[in-house]
Length: 487
Image (spheres, rainbow, N blue to C red):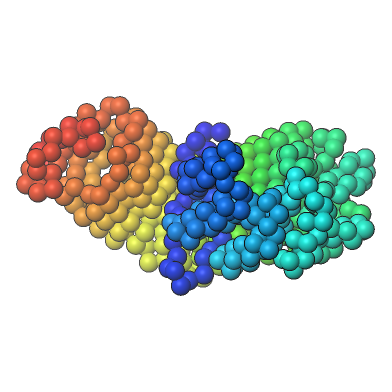
């Protein structure tokens, strides 16, 4: 999916040492994975060669977790240390690590804790280790017969065989079997399907990670009352899914839960959902309407990116946080409405701003000549991303910062003038502005990365002030020749 190629990612969460850390987003975790792999490369090599034990590598992972730059790196390092201790039979240290992890990231979902435990136990030869670990952690692993087990349970309902796990007497439908991803339902569902309200004697409360991912012949799904969470990628790439009925009991929609459901036409999010996670409906290009309830307080990055049939959207009063690129690629979107009682955001002529109008958050489907109003000091990342109908943009002197990817893919722009007060610009701000031939900088050189103009093949020169000290002695800026004639 082209929109997913544009996902540069969210800024890592940074907390002061004395503050409680927040649960990293899926995107932050994804960005942290190669960093963590590099940090532990030598230890893993030593483990493979037999020079170090799993517990010794776990000690190294915990040391690096204490020095981690982001909460996502910390989470992955501590999670890895926990698994290594379990696999080495060092269950007391494993329990200490899990308790430290819960303390470091207090809003760590219980579902994540459960998955960490069960994944760590896969392949552990001593069956009694599983029961002992749960006892040390103070966790209860319930099954049909009350015996602790890392294996999934199976139930047949209405001709389908369902895979599920049970915790505290509640069932979550799961796709994972023995560590290998597979559909939670067999045979692969076709047409309309109703998810059972109970499996075995247990009430179904969760749709687990990737449970229906890639079930392309699924056209309609009814989720029963009692389900409180739909997890990461649960229905991702269900390209035939046209309708989905969400229960009033629903409280959370996970990362990319319905990403790539290109046939989905509408969605009503129940009142009770607080967070719409990043990429939840990314690429749902047939969606024409979406109802965001009053209960929602946060809309994650790119949540409705690529919903190109979406014509309007209403932001309720309780929304306090809106991520980047939420409505990027919504080609039919004409305006954004914001409830007058919202204390964080406002809309003027369909354009989304912060309440004090100092930050431009999103200009939906920009067309022709765009004039940003005076008083705006920051153009947020992704604000005009993919605005192919925009032929020019006037940036006022009040602007001091332009966020990452702000004008990416605006291939109708031929020239742009950056005001003198702009002090910083983010990554990929003008990427793939293929018609851009002229850039004029009216002030001193702003702080900016090298990835400012990739894909701008027609840009041959940047005009800068002849008397600007920060430009003095420079011949080019990131490989683009400078012309000292700007006024």
